[in-house]
Image (cartoon, rainbow, N blue to C red; front, side):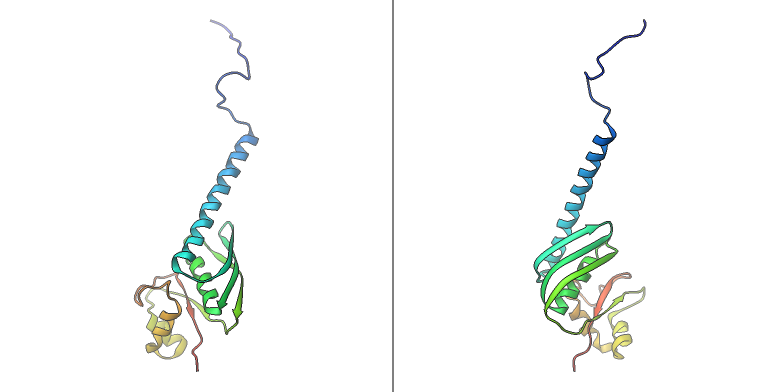
Length: 159
């Protein structure tokens, strides 16, 4: 046996150039990004949060949200719905509000917290926990179902 010669460009192409590998990686990353954007829009749609001209952009772990809502509360709920998704670290708010109102405070739930403990901290009245619960619907389904790391809206008390 000895040295055999073959046509370099013929046969199975199992070796890809660095440009081909980079193009495939970029196409795969774009597809994953698109899937994540569709899923994030699904979160907002699934909660029935009203927003017109919704548009999202995703860069690493930051979501930029564009659109228009009727109320400050709806705007804040959309921000929280997106921010409380695993893998999202920050939400860049570009939402405009038709009827501006005072902004709510945001609170990150700690281990051992309950809505009544949070209400006592912010309103000096543990029995005001329904205000916080209502302010975070539809993200919260039950007052006892909160978890550490979750971020909640704490609206100002009216009157």
